[in-house]
Structure formats: structure tokens, C-alpha cells
View 1: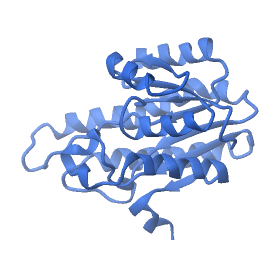
View 2: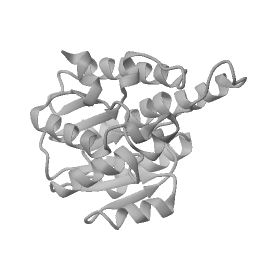
View 3: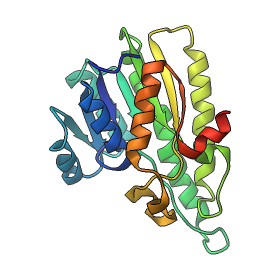
View 4: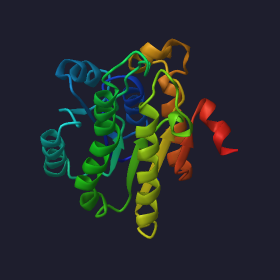
Length: 230
């Protein structure tokens, strides 16, 4: 996959892993479009990027997904890579929470169903490109759950299963590449509740993704996740 001259859409791109990826890919000669729910955070992030664009919206909401996909195709027709990074996670104990099913529904909607729908909306456009990529930010949680994140791991395992099927479906389409990134604990605001301060910097995830794009390495383990790929 070429690593410069792309136009790249990054969901959840105003902070954390998404913003680290945006900075890395922007610095290496790519046009960046970041998405997030907060207009204020998007504008602050935009000021730290060169010639970047922002699209506000919540991809967990169907109407927003449709609007954002339409805006991308109409206003940024050169977009050839989408990075599905936006996520949701709730930290709690099953023996202390009575509404675990509600949290699981919210996590599954953001981490799984919305990714499938948004990817489906952009696929016809991406398939027309000489080179196109779909990058999904998965998790080390694919390989096992944790009691403080009792339903989050299942959403990432579901996402992984979808990615494998998507990659297999389009394996003959040589212009389309499907990546899965497996971050471990990362020091971001997103992971603060579960000890994120002890995690790796988000820039390490961005660097590993960049190297994987250079090598056409479709599975991208990061940090502790590498133990599962020996």
C-alpha cells in the first residue's frame, strides 16, 4: 500500500489512537479527514495537522453514518482509505451492574454494527480506486476477555470475524487491502478507567500501522499483542 498521496478518513480522529494515526499519516504526505462527536475537539486537533479536514458526527447513529459517507463521497471523492477507529467500552463488574445488557448493546453497536454499515456504504467507492484500504482498529481483547471489560472483548471478537470474512471476500480485488490493528492497553483518555496510564503511547500504534502499510502486512499486532502472532 502506498504510504503517501492518500486521502484518509479516520473516525475518532480527534484524540487518542485516532489522532496519533492522523498525525503520523499527515506528516508522511497524506490528506487527512478526521471525524468525531465533538466539534470543539475536532477543531483543536485540526490546528495540529497540515491541511486536514473535519467531519463532525457520531458513527454509532445510523443517520450520521449515512450523512458522513455521502459527504465523503461527494466532497472528498479522492478518499481511498478509511480507518475505523471510533469505539466504545464500559468498565464494570458483572456482579455489581444490573444493566450489563444495555452496555453490551451500546458497545456492540459502536464497535461492530456501525463498522459493518459504514464500510458497506464506502465499499463501492473504494473499489473504484487504483489503491484502497480499509483499516480496522481492533484490540488485544480479541484474544481474551477481562473482568473489568466483560462485554467489550466480545465486540472486538465479532469485529475480527467480520474482518476475516471481508478480507476473504475481496481477496481477488488486488486494489483493496483490509487491515486489522491489535493494540494492547494504550495510554489514552479512552482507557483511563482501566489503568491506561500504564499502557503504551498511542504513537506506537500509529508507527506499527505505518510500517504495516509499507509492507502490505494485513494483521498488525502491537506491543503485547505480538505474542499471539509468533
